[in-house]
Length: 263
Image 1 (tube, rainbow, N blue to C red):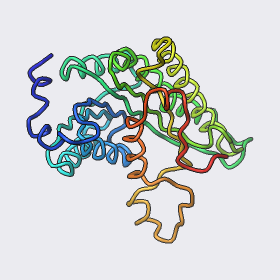
Image 2 (cartoon, helix red, strand yellow):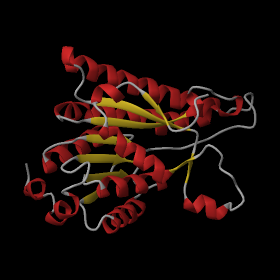
Image 3 (cartoon, rainbow, N blue to C red):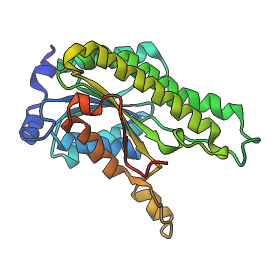
Protein backbone atom coordinates (compact mmCIF):
# COMPACT_ATOMS: atom_id res chain seq x y z
CA UNK A 1 0.00 0.00 0.00
CA UNK A 2 1.30 3.51 -0.80
CA UNK A 3 1.82 6.27 1.75
CA UNK A 4 -1.32 7.83 0.33
CA UNK A 5 -3.25 4.71 1.27
CA UNK A 6 -1.74 4.48 4.76
CA UNK A 7 -2.57 8.06 5.47
CA UNK A 8 -6.00 8.19 3.77
CA UNK A 9 -5.78 11.84 4.73
CA UNK A 10 -5.81 12.61 8.43
CA UNK A 11 -8.44 15.27 8.01
CA UNK A 12 -10.68 12.71 6.33
CA UNK A 13 -10.28 10.37 9.30
CA UNK A 14 -11.16 13.17 11.69
CA UNK A 15 -14.35 13.87 9.77
CA UNK A 16 -15.45 10.29 9.33
CA UNK A 17 -14.53 8.24 12.39
CA UNK A 18 -18.15 7.65 13.30
CA UNK A 19 -19.67 7.49 9.83
CA UNK A 20 -21.60 4.47 8.61
CA UNK A 21 -18.96 3.93 5.90
CA UNK A 22 -15.91 4.80 7.97
CA UNK A 23 -12.85 3.14 6.46
CA UNK A 24 -14.57 2.16 3.21
CA UNK A 25 -13.09 3.04 -0.18
CA UNK A 26 -15.74 3.63 -2.83
CA UNK A 27 -15.37 4.48 -6.50
CA UNK A 28 -18.05 6.48 -8.30
CA UNK A 29 -18.24 6.28 -12.09
CA UNK A 30 -19.94 9.26 -13.68
CA UNK A 31 -19.12 11.46 -10.71
CA UNK A 32 -19.36 14.79 -12.51
CA UNK A 33 -23.11 14.84 -13.10
CA UNK A 34 -25.78 15.93 -10.61
CA UNK A 35 -26.33 12.40 -9.30
CA UNK A 36 -22.59 11.83 -9.10
CA UNK A 37 -22.10 15.02 -7.13
CA UNK A 38 -24.80 14.04 -4.66
CA UNK A 39 -23.28 10.56 -4.28
CA UNK A 40 -19.78 11.93 -3.68
CA UNK A 41 -21.11 14.21 -0.95
CA UNK A 42 -23.24 11.58 0.77
CA UNK A 43 -20.58 8.88 0.75
CA UNK A 44 -17.92 11.30 2.00
CA UNK A 45 -20.21 12.52 4.78
CA UNK A 46 -20.77 8.88 5.74
CA UNK A 47 -17.04 8.43 6.24
CA UNK A 48 -15.91 6.79 3.03
CA UNK A 49 -12.83 7.62 1.04
CA UNK A 50 -14.36 8.40 -2.34
CA UNK A 51 -12.69 8.25 -5.75
CA UNK A 52 -14.74 9.73 -8.56
CA UNK A 53 -14.27 9.30 -12.29
CA UNK A 54 -15.64 11.30 -15.18
CA UNK A 55 -14.58 12.04 -18.75
CA UNK A 56 -14.91 15.80 -18.19
CA UNK A 57 -12.01 16.98 -15.99
CA UNK A 58 -13.50 20.38 -15.17
CA UNK A 59 -16.87 18.98 -14.19
CA UNK A 60 -15.14 16.29 -12.13
CA UNK A 61 -12.90 18.79 -10.34
CA UNK A 62 -15.89 20.92 -9.39
CA UNK A 63 -17.75 17.87 -8.06
CA UNK A 64 -14.77 16.68 -6.02
CA UNK A 65 -14.16 20.13 -4.54
CA UNK A 66 -17.84 20.49 -3.62
CA UNK A 67 -17.85 17.10 -1.86
CA UNK A 68 -14.70 17.90 0.08
CA UNK A 69 -16.15 21.20 1.22
CA UNK A 70 -19.56 19.79 2.12
CA UNK A 71 -18.08 16.94 4.14
CA UNK A 72 -15.66 19.12 6.05
CA UNK A 73 -12.48 17.81 4.44
CA UNK A 74 -13.05 14.10 3.89
CA UNK A 75 -10.83 12.30 1.39
CA UNK A 76 -12.41 12.77 -2.02
CA UNK A 77 -10.31 12.47 -5.16
CA UNK A 78 -11.03 12.38 -8.87
CA UNK A 79 -9.58 10.68 -11.92
CA UNK A 80 -10.32 11.44 -15.56
CA UNK A 81 -11.01 7.98 -16.97
CA UNK A 82 -12.23 6.73 -20.34
CA UNK A 83 -14.70 4.10 -19.18
CA UNK A 84 -15.25 3.08 -22.79
CA UNK A 85 -11.74 1.68 -22.76
CA UNK A 86 -11.47 -1.56 -20.77
CA UNK A 87 -7.75 -1.26 -20.06
CA UNK A 88 -8.13 2.31 -18.81
CA UNK A 89 -10.91 1.14 -16.52
CA UNK A 90 -8.80 -1.76 -15.26
CA UNK A 91 -5.92 0.63 -14.62
CA UNK A 92 -8.24 2.89 -12.63
CA UNK A 93 -9.42 0.00 -10.45
CA UNK A 94 -5.84 -1.20 -9.92
CA UNK A 95 -4.52 2.17 -8.86
CA UNK A 96 -7.36 2.70 -6.37
CA UNK A 97 -6.61 -0.63 -4.69
CA UNK A 98 -2.87 0.05 -4.77
CA UNK A 99 -3.18 3.57 -3.36
CA UNK A 100 -5.82 2.89 -0.72
CA UNK A 101 -5.34 -0.81 -0.04
CA UNK A 102 -8.88 -1.87 -0.83
CA UNK A 103 -11.99 -1.21 -2.89
CA UNK A 104 -15.32 -1.60 -1.12
CA UNK A 105 -17.64 -0.29 -3.77
CA UNK A 106 -18.27 0.83 -7.31
CA UNK A 107 -21.29 3.06 -7.90
CA UNK A 108 -22.21 3.23 -11.58
CA UNK A 109 -23.80 6.58 -12.43
CA UNK A 110 -22.87 6.88 -16.09
CA UNK A 111 -26.07 7.95 -17.81
CA UNK A 112 -27.59 9.22 -21.00
CA UNK A 113 -30.95 9.28 -22.76
CA UNK A 114 -32.31 9.38 -26.27
CA UNK A 115 -35.89 8.80 -27.27
CA UNK A 116 -38.05 9.01 -30.36
CA UNK A 117 -41.46 10.34 -31.31
CA UNK A 118 -42.76 6.86 -32.15
CA UNK A 119 -41.44 3.31 -32.30
CA UNK A 120 -41.21 3.40 -36.08
CA UNK A 121 -39.10 6.55 -35.93
CA UNK A 122 -36.55 4.99 -33.60
CA UNK A 123 -33.05 5.65 -34.84
CA UNK A 124 -30.55 2.83 -34.47
CA UNK A 125 -27.93 5.53 -34.07
CA UNK A 126 -29.56 6.16 -30.71
CA UNK A 127 -29.05 2.50 -29.82
CA UNK A 128 -25.37 2.71 -30.79
CA UNK A 129 -24.95 5.76 -28.58
CA UNK A 130 -26.81 4.31 -25.59
CA UNK A 131 -25.19 0.89 -25.88
CA UNK A 132 -21.82 2.54 -25.34
CA UNK A 133 -22.88 4.73 -22.42
CA UNK A 134 -25.28 2.43 -20.61
CA UNK A 135 -23.99 -1.06 -21.40
CA UNK A 136 -20.33 -0.93 -22.35
CA UNK A 137 -19.38 1.15 -19.32
CA UNK A 138 -21.18 -1.35 -17.05
CA UNK A 139 -19.29 -4.20 -18.68
CA UNK A 140 -15.97 -2.44 -18.24
CA UNK A 141 -16.45 -1.31 -14.62
CA UNK A 142 -17.76 -4.71 -13.52
CA UNK A 143 -14.92 -6.60 -15.21
CA UNK A 144 -12.37 -4.17 -13.83
CA UNK A 145 -13.61 -4.09 -10.23
CA UNK A 146 -15.20 -7.47 -9.51
CA UNK A 147 -12.09 -9.15 -8.08
CA UNK A 148 -11.27 -6.25 -5.76
CA UNK A 149 -14.89 -6.11 -4.62
CA UNK A 150 -14.84 -9.83 -3.90
CA UNK A 151 -11.70 -9.35 -1.78
CA UNK A 152 -13.54 -6.76 0.32
CA UNK A 153 -15.54 -7.75 3.37
CA UNK A 154 -18.33 -5.44 2.22
CA UNK A 155 -17.87 -5.05 -1.52
CA UNK A 156 -20.81 -3.58 -3.41
CA UNK A 157 -21.44 -2.92 -7.10
CA UNK A 158 -24.38 -0.53 -7.41
CA UNK A 159 -26.09 0.09 -10.74
CA UNK A 160 -28.62 2.88 -11.17
CA UNK A 161 -31.33 1.76 -13.58
CA UNK A 162 -34.74 2.93 -14.78
CA UNK A 163 -38.23 1.52 -14.45
CA UNK A 164 -38.46 1.62 -18.23
CA UNK A 165 -36.17 -1.40 -18.41
CA UNK A 166 -39.02 -3.49 -16.99
CA UNK A 167 -41.82 -1.65 -18.80
CA UNK A 168 -40.51 -0.28 -22.11
CA UNK A 169 -42.56 2.21 -24.08
CA UNK A 170 -42.74 2.64 -27.83
CA UNK A 171 -40.82 5.91 -27.80
CA UNK A 172 -38.03 4.61 -25.55
CA UNK A 173 -37.12 1.33 -27.21
CA UNK A 174 -33.37 1.98 -27.45
CA UNK A 175 -33.10 3.40 -23.93
CA UNK A 176 -35.16 0.66 -22.30
CA UNK A 177 -33.27 -2.07 -24.13
CA UNK A 178 -29.91 -0.64 -23.08
CA UNK A 179 -31.01 -0.35 -19.46
CA UNK A 180 -32.35 -3.92 -19.53
CA UNK A 181 -29.03 -5.17 -20.90
CA UNK A 182 -27.14 -3.32 -18.17
CA UNK A 183 -29.40 -4.89 -15.54
CA UNK A 184 -28.86 -8.37 -16.97
CA UNK A 185 -25.10 -7.88 -16.91
CA UNK A 186 -25.24 -6.70 -13.31
CA UNK A 187 -27.35 -9.68 -12.29
CA UNK A 188 -24.74 -11.95 -13.86
CA UNK A 189 -22.15 -10.25 -11.65
CA UNK A 190 -24.43 -10.93 -8.69
CA UNK A 191 -24.42 -14.61 -9.61
CA UNK A 192 -20.62 -14.52 -9.59
CA UNK A 193 -20.66 -13.11 -6.07
CA UNK A 194 -23.23 -15.71 -5.00
CA UNK A 195 -21.14 -18.60 -6.30
CA UNK A 196 -17.91 -17.14 -4.90
CA UNK A 197 -19.51 -16.97 -1.44
CA UNK A 198 -20.20 -20.69 -1.37
CA UNK A 199 -22.53 -22.31 1.17
CA UNK A 200 -22.23 -19.42 3.60
CA UNK A 201 -23.61 -16.97 1.06
CA UNK A 202 -22.13 -13.95 -0.69
CA UNK A 203 -19.82 -11.54 1.09
CA UNK A 204 -20.01 -9.02 -1.75
CA UNK A 205 -23.03 -7.96 -3.75
CA UNK A 206 -24.25 -6.43 -6.97
CA UNK A 207 -27.50 -4.50 -6.60
CA UNK A 208 -29.70 -2.39 -8.84
CA UNK A 209 -31.41 0.80 -7.68
CA UNK A 210 -34.41 1.53 -9.90
CA UNK A 211 -35.83 5.01 -10.47
CA UNK A 212 -38.42 6.42 -12.85
CA UNK A 213 -36.16 9.39 -13.57
CA UNK A 214 -33.96 11.75 -11.58
CA UNK A 215 -34.51 15.37 -10.63
CA UNK A 216 -32.21 17.96 -9.09
CA UNK A 217 -32.37 21.60 -8.02
CA UNK A 218 -31.28 23.03 -11.38
CA UNK A 219 -34.10 21.17 -13.14
CA UNK A 220 -36.63 22.56 -10.70
CA UNK A 221 -35.27 26.07 -11.19
CA UNK A 222 -35.56 25.73 -14.97
CA UNK A 223 -39.12 24.36 -14.77
CA UNK A 224 -40.67 25.83 -11.60
CA UNK A 225 -44.18 24.69 -12.52
CA UNK A 226 -43.25 21.08 -13.32
CA UNK A 227 -44.44 18.38 -10.91
CA UNK A 228 -41.75 15.75 -11.68
CA UNK A 229 -44.21 13.12 -10.45
CA UNK A 230 -42.49 9.89 -9.46
CA UNK A 231 -39.02 11.31 -10.01
CA UNK A 232 -36.29 10.61 -7.44
CA UNK A 233 -34.27 13.53 -6.17
CA UNK A 234 -30.54 12.95 -6.57
CA UNK A 235 -30.07 13.52 -2.84
CA UNK A 236 -32.56 10.76 -2.05
CA UNK A 237 -30.77 8.52 -4.55
CA UNK A 238 -27.48 9.23 -2.79
CA UNK A 239 -29.07 8.25 0.53
CA UNK A 240 -30.30 4.99 -1.02
CA UNK A 241 -26.83 4.30 -2.40
CA UNK A 242 -25.35 4.66 1.08
CA UNK A 243 -28.07 2.36 2.38
CA UNK A 244 -26.90 -0.52 0.20
CA UNK A 245 -23.98 -0.94 2.61
CA UNK A 246 -26.27 -1.01 5.64
CA UNK A 247 -27.75 -4.32 4.52
CA UNK A 248 -26.03 -7.69 4.32
CA UNK A 249 -24.69 -8.87 0.99
CA UNK A 250 -27.35 -11.60 0.88
CA UNK A 251 -30.13 -9.02 1.33
CA UNK A 252 -29.13 -6.96 -1.70
CA UNK A 253 -27.18 -9.26 -4.00
CA UNK A 254 -29.04 -9.80 -7.26
CA UNK A 255 -31.97 -7.60 -6.21
CA UNK A 256 -33.68 -4.64 -7.79
CA UNK A 257 -34.27 -2.08 -5.06
CA UNK A 258 -37.16 0.12 -6.18
CA UNK A 259 -37.13 3.85 -5.43
CA UNK A 260 -40.27 4.37 -7.49
CA UNK A 261 -43.49 2.45 -8.01
CA UNK A 262 -43.04 -0.87 -9.73
CA UNK A 263 -44.60 -0.94 -13.22
